[in-house]
Length: 152
Image 1 (tube, rainbow, N blue to C red):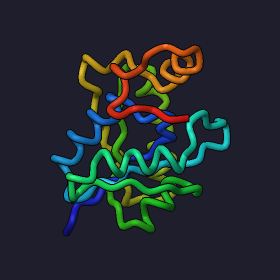
Image 2 (image 1 turned 90 degrees about the horizontal axis):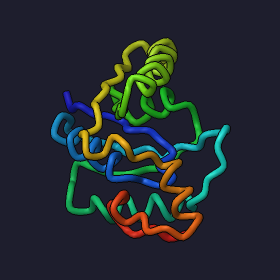
Image 3 (image 1 turned 45 degrees about the horizontal axis):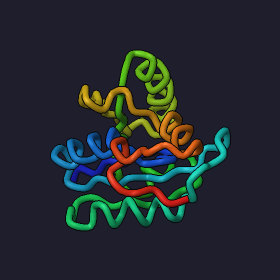
C-alpha cells in the first residue's frame, strides 16, 4: 500500500522550517501532499493562490511532493486524498501541546488517521511565519528564512 501523508498548514508564508519538514517527510512517505488550508481564525497576509503556486514551483523536481489548497476539516480532506498520515512539524514543547490536541481530534474524526511529528532541525527552530510576516511588513529582508522570494 502506498504511504500518503498530508502536511497541512496555512503556510503564510512557507518557511525554510516548513521546507525542512517537507524534504525529510518526503523520504518517509511515497507521496507527500502539502495542504494549504484555510484557518477561520486567521486572516492571510500573503495571497493563498500565489503561495500555492510558489510552493508547487519550488518542489517541481520532486515527483512525490505536491501542494493543494483546501477549505474543509483537515481530517476529512486527508481521508478524501487517501492519506493515512498527517505530518506535523514541531519547534518546541509548546508546539507539541497544541499539535497533540489537534492530533487527538483528527484521530477521533478519522480513526485510521495517524499524526506523525517531526522536530524541525535546530537551525530552523526559531523561524515562525508570524515573525516573518511582521519583518516583511516593516520592510526587512526575510530571504534567509524562506526558500523562495515572497511576493505580496
